[in-house]
Length: 146
Image (cartoon, rainbow, N blue to C red):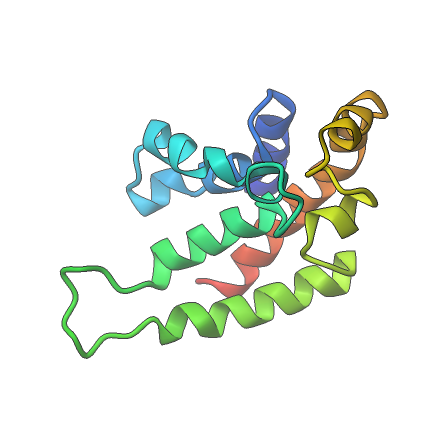
């Protein structure tokens, strides 16, 4: 299986979209998988079921930051410019494929409302729609970050 397929399989095992995207990059990033799963755990459902930025997108942004971002130990002359330069084409391609990065737009409903969240679960929206977003996020991040 490639990374995108593995991320979708991870999502189908019950991890959220953000965890699923980040998880397939942990080994190459030298990141502990358990810690990564915990870090990304609050980003599913558009950040804590607030229906804002899709968790697959936030997971991909975490990967971009881990690959190209500055750390506390970096010199003050390094910047996050490489991160921003990679995020721009990532977002543009994700929007081209899916029309939005907002969870509520992607799902076609606002899961920040508890009743709507329950209906989305009952209607199987997460199982039918989200695997594509996870797949797309991984494919795109692989193409924009080397």
